Amino acid sequence: MKRVVITGMALKSPLGCDINTACSNLDKYKNCVEYWNVLDEFENLNTRLAAPVNDFKIPEHFTRKITRTMGKVALFAVACSEEALIDSGLINDEIITNGQTGVSYGSSSGSLTSIIDFYTMQVEKKVRCVNSGSYVKMMPQTTTVNISLYFKLKGRLVPASTACTSGSMGIGYAYEAIKNGYQTVMIAGGAEELHPSHIAIFDTLYATSLKNNTPNLTPRPFDKERDGLVLGEGAGTLILEEYEHAKKRNAKIYAEIIGFGTSTDGCHITNPNQDTMKNALELAIKDAKISPDDIGYVNAHGTATIQGDIAESNATENIFKRKVPTSSLKSYTGHTLGACGAIEAVLSIMMMNNNRYYPTINLENVDEDCGKLDYIKNEAREIKTDIIMSNNFAFGGINTSLIFKKI
Image (cartoon, rainbow, N blue to C red):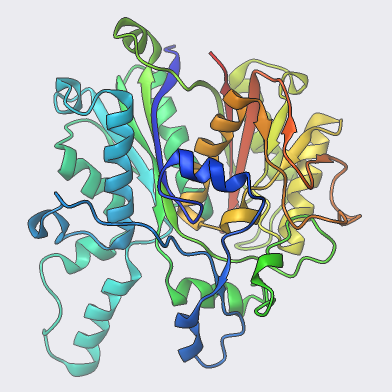
């Protein structure tokens, strides 16, 4: 089996559109949630909260010909991936186009704005808005396909459209492709764009936060006063590379991926199951060939929903049998759906390399029904550990766990 390392990273997030800005904003211990006026026009929608990416700019060299098949989610993904490849030093390397590089990337859906083109056709009975790019913008594999086309990839294309685990699943599948010798390099991650319909889905499930007048106080993962999630948007890209190839070219290495586990609940489309969540964590630890005692920090999915927080934290406690240091970055960014696994992986790796782990903000009193963990609160904590875990869970009962190691 091949070793897999990370040699490039980039993100677009509510915290900022580059890693340094995002980390600097984490240091402020303030969330990115705001009253989103866009939601005011929708009747029967209860929440007005969202965490948009406010400083994203389409790169000037993205011509109309390039962007005609890209909705916002694909623009996030491609721009982020370009920056990650530049960071890795591989942007102009022949390995990108000779078949040794693939892409494993995801989002919960394609660009929902483009669905209006098809809706207009159905209502007006006229083919007025639909064009050659409409479906490509909307299709669930729009991020992977547009990345593949933009960089002229010839290797594997793995669309990871698995709701809130899309980003982490994209990383996990990329890791397996290199580990098993199928590819030398993989562009991996996930993206999502904010859309009112996404928010409405969670609102109808009574899962959204209603603290419309105090956006700075929500979401509150694991807190007994939490009242639901807030949706965000963005993208995260990691460049995965076979270790010997990276070593030979003296590449900068952020971390090694040593474990990946995924499982499904097989019981309910939206209600989480802590036993099968636990299975994903166990599989990742088994894959990494380590003990839970070797892991010094867990980046939690932590959406601030009652059922999700309780199930996840108890599954984590059952694995570690100790109060492992844990925090949720969604308290800053909101829930970025298909992007969260990738954004959180990038930030978790930065925390590991800096020995500085950020707290779950707005966490004051841990819900007594949550698992007994060492919840990092109030301020960042210095933790010296060589191994961390990042977990994500999704609608459909899809569970993922990734384990990263300093190298």
